[in-house]
Image (cartoon, rainbow, N blue to C red):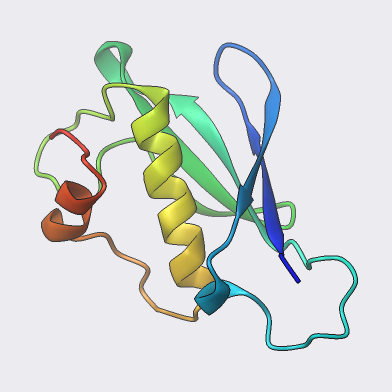
Length: 115
């Protein structure tokens, strides 16, 4: 059974994207017909034509990340795709109860994020 994470993306135009989560992040219950979607993200505009993201738990803002996590500058991601990749990755950490759901330089490099 495949579970999917549906996220709303804002920033220029409203779209909904669906990502299939890897098996390690899927709920343990095999009885569920539909996935339980708890976390969503929205892409936001940053400074100097860059992007960041907000992560929501239901309707409550959980993480406001206008910059690249763990980086000393105030610059955001160079493109929306990079912001989407990292936001989705942070959500997988939240789903796996990894707190805080930080992102290391090594993880950013593995996702081919330029910083």
